[in-house]
Length: 237
Image 1 (cartoon, helix red, strand yellow):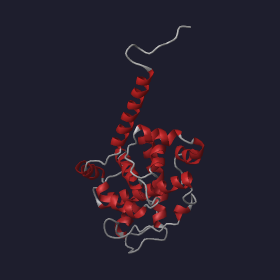
Image 2 (cartoon, helix red, strand yellow; image 1 turned 135 degrees about the vertical axis):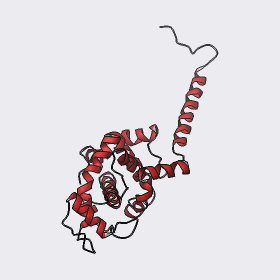
Image 3 (cartoon, rainbow, N blue to C red; image 1 turned 90 degrees about the horizontal axis):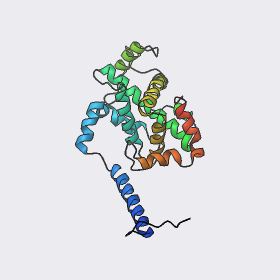
Image 4 (spheres, rainbow, N blue to C red; image 1 turned 90 degrees about the vertical axis):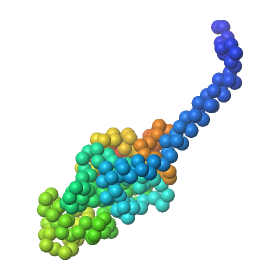
């Protein structure tokens, strides 16, 4: 068999150097993908999706990671809910429903990482300590009562000044299925799983670049099986 030689004027070392340069270029592009979003662009997006109204509560309700990209992921997921038509904040009752969906979203996030990283028992989310009643950005008891009457998910009178016991848990049980379905429909199983997994690392920008996506999906698949199965099984609580 005739020996194969590199093209004239270029040797094998040149090919290796060229491949190294391409690899460095890819890494540079990935690093650029993780650069922060322009502040004006982010503000406009938050106004459009309603995150400007409810996002402050995400900071209070979700504390899975001391360092990570948890709140960036919640904002990204909220954009997916916006695409599904689930983030209207036009009137007080609509706003209350948006807050309820955000609460459900934070619990789904918490349960994913219970499966993925054993941060807690998967049922521990039910030990609800979240304050949902109050002035903005929370919701007054009267408005929660109006939402309860509209959706019929809890026996509650809007004449009461206080919420019934475990009302926040009722909200999560009611809204988590539709929030999970919207995430799966909008992002797809693989991209949803990958984004959730990657969010435990600091400085992640969403949507994920190719490198972070493949790291999340392809590296150590057996380690990730429980969390992946939960995600693809409709994220059931």
